[in-house]
Length: 355
Image 1 (cartoon, rainbow, N blue to C red):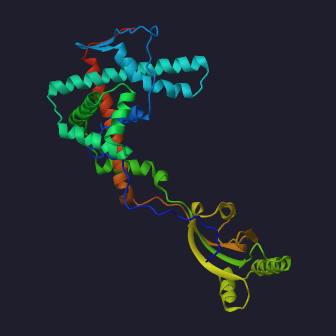
Image 2: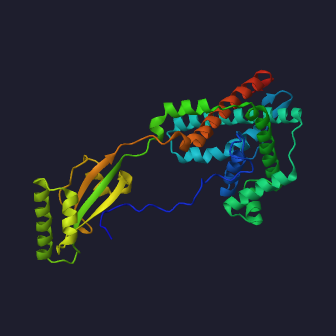
Image 3: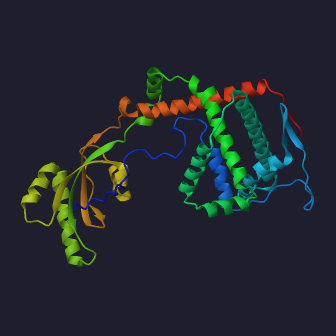
């Protein structure tokens, strides 16, 4: 085993790991929001926020969206999961109050947008089957390794029934279909768009600089005597002297292989800095092509590193990253087009927020 301290590269499965979804990767409205809500539900109870006395249940209208209303109860229920998270951040009282106020305002905005989307769903007569809802719930349960009973208990801890949860999932699927119709179908990304992004972000797709390394070393165990360690250091020091006199590193490695010396040498090949141990990384990153290090004391013994050549960072070929860039552009366009569509929907709707 060659004693260069190189970080072990973990084995990775082939292919990309993507979040499971009942829709293809390029759909803007997946069940992510629904799954997030379910995650909060399963995590444990969160106290509801009621702006009233403990024993008093107060409800009122907080927003009117066309001919439908959003109640205080609905707002508090949607807002509740965020409260403990914000309080756990231990903000100063005033900042906590401002943060809670802003998040509550944002949640109300999301409820309004959701109601507008639901109204459009009904106008467009978009439907969802029970099989689609069942499939979405089963995917969530599998991802969390939940039994039916654990799922039921998690919902109950939040005061939600399975029927109510199924309705939330149904709404998310309906909105996904709506956005696919209103937004996704109108997006076109050309190869020229992808190339333009690639050219303006070449540094993002640059491969790391790589160093072609050689080494010479003497193995010394921790149990070696002081005499043995001194002899090893002296042999390595003699090699440094010859290198400074102009002896080629590669030639010395060949000579060592044919000798009876304890010193060994090898051609290690190409490495990026991230593949090296921290000790070698600090040494190699300061070296130029043709440089050799001082004698390094490592866990293996004594070692000299030589940088034969350096391959500068180069951008990955366009063909290699084309699909990745298309995904990025698609998401950006979908997000932008969805916001534009929502703004148009808001503009032609009657929305009144009641403080």
